Length: 311
Image (cartoon, helix red, strand yellow):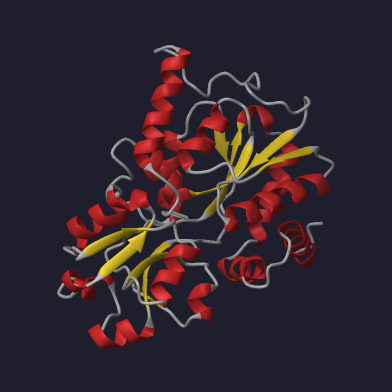
């Protein structure tokens, strides 16, 4: 969710409830900045990531950008879904990770993102109001990676599909594939039904915009797939992304989420410089080097930083 394919609101609630219970009813789980479970040396920033390729690539870009400014960095990538990495941030196991403004807002705001909030600046303003104590976000980038409903060119032609609205009269004949959490998400099946009146014949739990969903779509095992907008598979397979005229999917600008205790002017400057250079286009091209060309993530990150004068 990137994306919103980024990972279980119910799980976030459970994880934070557990954390609150462990801390005591009147304590904020992120108010203690003592470092918690971190094994990093004092002054070291531990950079984390979620369990998908783009998040790890962004985490590596952050890590190398900090190292270029003399910051000591420890990496802890591929932690898992949002409920897991937010808990790691809460207990001090990590200090920093790349996030998506809309997905994070939906996860943290009671009842999900406020109605009518979808533009990047509005999402950011709302997000800042619900960030847990002891955390902050830095400047968000222009780069965006949104959830999409994507179909093959054959399916788009057969059913005359251009927008999600066009699915309403035909969805009863179609199978959709996405991560298992999509069944309970507003930015998933629930929102599609309530906002668009779209109800599919069948839901197949696969992965969050990953290779299982892409392969199932290309092979005709599903008719519609939740694929992230920067995924190179869209162009490679000439897939069709359906427009979202009712803005079910919020802005998903990439933004650094950091523990306040780990931040300082050097860190802020390094990460804001990354955000200033990161665009959807250059992120998509860079991610393709990892996903399609199978290049090493650290090597690709180093190349991106060099190309953008940040190494």
